Length: 129
Image (cartoon, rainbow, N blue to C red):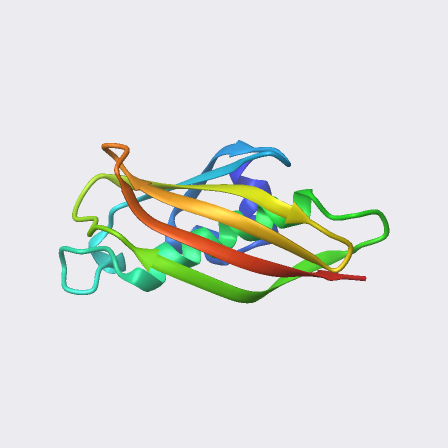
């Protein structure tokens, strides 16, 4: 499953993301805390969290493409950071909020290893034809 993820989106390999669950209803990606992904050697960088969320949301949108569509592209993304992540791992869980002909809206929750909500991302994906 990870090889398919890395082939489709090479950036996920750079992040160290691994696929936990991949289905149209839910995409769950995990990323280990790594000092190379921090802002100061302790706290995971917001860009790393956003990258993981964008990847999970993009896969979720792709799996929900309407008939005749060829791909998706993020057109908006809104992130709320709720707590710092300083160890362990994070999981991004993306679920479709609305699947339309031209856009797909995805909600992604990022939780730390203890299951505490660390960030929430809502993104809109353009449907490409």
